[in-house]
Image 1 (cartoon, rainbow, N blue to C red):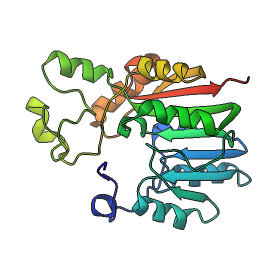
Image 2: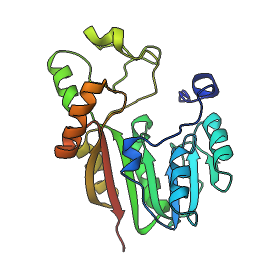
Image 3: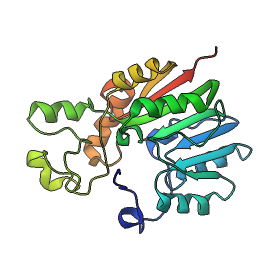
Image 4: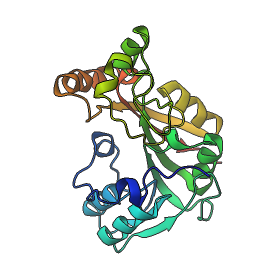
Length: 239
């Protein structure tokens, strides 16, 4: 059974997020039915509800601790506890828009995950995925220097394994990353599962030191394939 890195033990004392990440702000959209795959504490859905209170909002997450916070934050939302390695508890062609922020890197069977998103999305609907970029500009430097790229985890106990001279500054608690994608890999996976790619963007990584964030922001805007967080939007083709 997969380890829950977002359980009460790890994240139970953390307060609900008060603001959206840059990747989430760039993906806000107005549709009739909206599903957040991996909704966490409901921060993104709550902000979406403020944009349009008429939206029908759904969220699903594997962490019961985070879902509890989401339900308290957004009582009108429809929340489900689910395992993304199994069938999603929704009818086919149910949603106009699906958002999945920082989830695919935690999934074992990514083909199944994308296929299920495709199944529950209505024809012409949009899927937006955000995920850390293996080929972010600083990761290319780290690899050239013989160090692990950021976001990659080799241990379930110590996330700093493999980071060389940066190990002392690296967060030690793992977050459960199983595989890290680059934009082309996500594009290929989505295309193989029946999606048409609409856009590829990038967002900065807010946990970087201030001076790196300035560079990261510029690169994310000008060179999306080298930005920190990949944002890929794709449409389910109409038959």
